[in-house]
Image (cartoon, chains in turn green, cyan):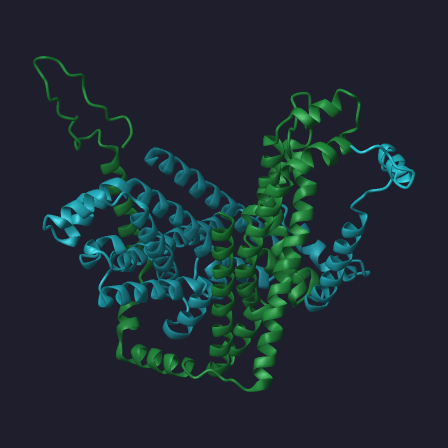
Length: 278
Length: 287
């Protein structure tokens, strides 16, 4: 804990004890109490159906469910469809991230105050827009966009793009503001226009950082794209929701396996890459 | 530099003149073409057809829907419902995280290599090493399945309602928390714990007196951060029938009730912002 230093040593008190914890001034105790109260209130108000979950009937149902899940269907036709859906998921995530990077950069420029004389008139408004884009989750975006473009992966791609543009736009704006001002200043005092200052001085500095943010978000988006489909936005999720809705557990199990394999593969790849780069 | 020979002279003249053409134009053009060639099949796979947005009448339902966002619905009945569902979202996240802790803490302790008695003497014995790797794989499986998929599965087993949401959060987050707890404990200074264990304390005592005092703040900080994430995901879990704000959004959206959707989105943004502020403040306190 912060702020607890020993009292000074004096001849009368050569080995001072640290101040006592506990008592009414103990912040950590109050926080713990608050957290406990929150947990108790949560369990009390949710009326969770533990009895139903633990009942013989539910256990039997769960057992049957798991038993069916353990027999994945591996007909070539289904495997082909799963492969198609996996590729669709990957394409959705990649294209969504690309759209997000372009839109994010376009929004980051007005959202960043790059030098002291920069009026940055649109900074507040753009930041508000970025926050709105970012705090609406992908799934809600997908549900909204389904109304506009109809069922299918296009809605999912746009949803990923919208949410990620908010995230990337904010990160991009921060790295633009944090870029070393020297080169841009040198060009600006010679009367070079803003666009060329950005392209020739600021962008080359921040480009590696922007790329690494984008790749990191792509990794997140592959995971998000796998589940977006449960509201009808294409990819593996849509197949999962479809087969589960029809209680075709064998097919569901194949799709689940593909999903877990995709997520684990992406995790392993990014872990390996980060280890190689570090 | 050697004196310019007649044969090298034209080359030399070219060097002193400024390059009028981008010297890297060939790789640039090649990479652009390669990227375009890769983008094409992706566009086909995702049915990327932005022009459907421009067709006459395509945007009309969307414009009507978004137009109904203003003004958001704010009558007392709906606000009461909204408040109840918001609390449910928070409660689902909190209860799920509490259950996740019950699972994550033992699993993390089982998988920490620092707390191995046989590991003190050099290589760990085969049994404990296999156990630890097994627990690590279990944690990997738990967190590899997205919580939305767990929720879909549990909705089939226990029916609609918050129980499936709580269980989904508990399983996914136990995987994440267990893995990160183990990583934090392993990266801390192991000297104190090892000295205790060499002098005959039990592994649990070594954990409480050797490892926990060092990394307690970091562990708590990570838990608070995950609580914030759990609130965000519990708000979304409702889309598959697990109660809370997500279910409310889903039903309002299916009825094309823009005013309700607008209020819910506003409350949701506010909730996420509050959780973000609270967790940032708590974590700053802990640092």
